[in-house]
Amino acid sequence: MPQVRNNYIDGAWRSAEHSSESRNPSDTNELIGSFAIASTTDVRDAVTAARKALADWKETSPQQRFDILDRAGDAIARRKQELATLLSREEGKTLPEAAAEVAKAAHTFKYFAGEAVRLSGASLRSVRNGVDVDVRREAVGIVGLITPWNFPFSIPAWKTAPALAYGNCVILKPSELTNAIAWELASILHEAGVPRGVFQMVMGGGEVGSALVTDPAVDAISFTGSGAVGRMIAGQAVARGARLQLELGGKNPLVVADDADLDKAVDAAVRSAFYSTGQRCTASSRVIVDAAVHDAFVERLVERASRLRVGNALDAASDIGPLVSADQLSRVSRYAEAAPSDGARHAFGGRVLEAPANGYYFEPAIFLDGDMRQAINREEVFGPVLSVFEAIDFDDAVRIANDTEFGLSAGIFTASHAKARAFIRASNSGMVMVNLPTVGSDYHVPFGGRGASAYGPKEMGLGAIEFFTQTKTAYVAD
Image (cartoon, rainbow, N blue to C red; front, side, top):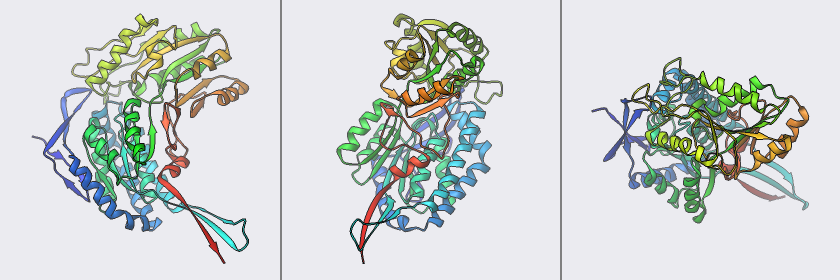
């Protein structure tokens, strides 16, 4: 029997009565590991430990917090290849993509190490004579982080690093599909010297997450995942007055104008829609092409998709790895099978692949005659399924792009500066890419969407301070 990796509570590794297994989606015969399932008592103990540690951690010097986060960033960078291999084996993204994710996590910890010593406020004169005003930022308190399986290392990093930098205590609940890589992050933080109770990790499913969300001593919840789960969390957290940050789904449009460089636009569409097996909230699931170049674009898109190789995530020849689980494979294939009866015209792919064996492999799919009444365009498929729309002109393309409840990421390919600026102004999305894929983000700027894609302050960079700190205004008389 493999060793069970335990939860991390109050500075120690705690065993549990029950455990779960993690298997390689590229080859389900391979067992990644066994992981302790936390109980509701474990969650409560973690909250108690965090409450006990909070006062001292909030008063810890910025230099001490810098040192811990900086050491964590260094450790991640040193172990980049090892961690990337584990990430690929557990989640299924290709090794180059996994390596990029690990590198981003290292950069994120290093960046927020610096932010710990740059935390600033404001000093102003009052409108009343003889009174000064100081506005300072302080930690929110205990923060519960519930993170997804699709970026199982970088998303925990970009939530944990700012939370700790600004003096909060953290309880992380990773996806039960990717406990192995999350466990490594907990181990790295332990070795970096995080004090007891300041960072903790509880593994498990919905019961563990619900216990964290509903605990009255948890001051804030940050969740990344599906809209359905996000709405449930919102109902639980808002009802008790917790601070809430939700990053949810997307139906991200990529507009191809009549003056676009088609080769670059096709490359961006393929990378946005199909890489990471389409399992990204920022993936381009809708490509909206001007009628003047529609047919030429589609021809090049199908040809490019036909050359993609789907295979084991660790195989250097693989462009795309497997979907993460049997449930995800079933979900994505159902959408692809139903699309033609919904009015979409099949152009390429969409099959469950029998080879390589023992994995959750799916052939990227392209559908034409896109219409916002079709399920593959209204709902988040979260797989390599791309729908192509034909737009009459630029204004029609913008209208189609905005015709969704989601508003995470949007892109346009054009040679016109005026069209690019017009699209940036008109887009309802929280992030806009010009002559770039809709995927990809920098750790030092805000990340997040609008509408059904998000709730609360943005994540990352300059946005993180808005969620992980609260202001205090002090009036001081002479």
